[in-house]
Length: 438
Ligand SMILES: [Zn+2]
Ligand SMILES: [Zn+2]
Image 1 (tube, rainbow, N blue to C red):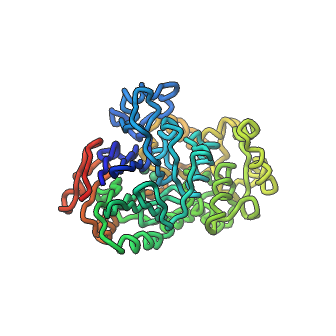
Image 2: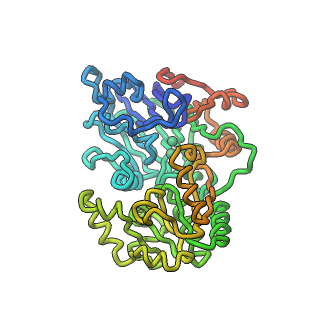
Image 3: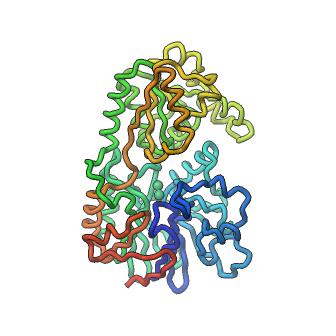
């Protein structure tokens, strides 16, 4: 078996991995890069009307034979694309791939991609292309037997893949961590891995360099949120990715624990509704503890986007903005800065606490300075409360030890050399460099 990482050996995200035997070729993840050639945050909007050929030329699309809609490429298409989870740095190039290639994904990833497409302009996948696998149950694609194992990450229903062919076993970690709400989730993967040798572990290394601080868990974060909400005199505005269901539940529970009502937007409400089919997440269509605020951008677009059913689904639990403004200190509200102009008439309620729950690097984007000024003017406070969606350095070493693979190949990292320091079995590849699994 041969493996090639077409992108991801020296960057965070943009993963694209090929595995091939003599007769079958599969692709794992087809991610959009997160950073551009200058090391700046990659602007996916800039792709606009660019053709596949232009995107190949400027290296946005890696040159994977047969994968993309490139009229000059006569190589047969691979047998399948596997998607580990619904983040754009793993799915974003899907729309440029040949439409005849089936896309294998978990039911939860399928649901999250649908919600991300409808509410956040993310990439979708047509139902015709979709092949949904059942987690923990092996399925076959040509020479390959593949088993997906649920892992904890900041996207709901993320998977790692155990990929077997020609007597070799490869484990692709996808993005994962051990400090989410369900650290025991990883046991299924570890148990399966222990049933035979793992020849290669393709391991994400976003946080391979120790941060020097103890890893905060999602449970720690929930306590922190409770503290912030208790100290807040006005409304609490929660800013996070709704696809991160752990975080969504954290905010909901923190609101409930402080006697406040959690107000979802239609995006977060639909994520909760979908996730409630798989686990104990409350469903805003039925759970009276949750209210749904239909903000203006939804009200203006739901018919055009085919989302009237979403409005009907949460209609019983809707809350108008006036009710929130009358008693702002009773609510924790899912919020985006664009709502200031669209829904709040350009001003924020007095003494608002805005809780920012993303990676702090994004705060360098210029629009944040303007929003923070506005918040200060209304006597509000800006609070940053976050923990990484990726495995911390200590856990990473423990995970690699327990996997006990013969080789470790770093991916999804800016610093693959940090793996090399203490692990002799590490093989560092370059993008596009084939590796023979032996
Ligand atoms: Zn990623
Ligand atoms: Zn991810």
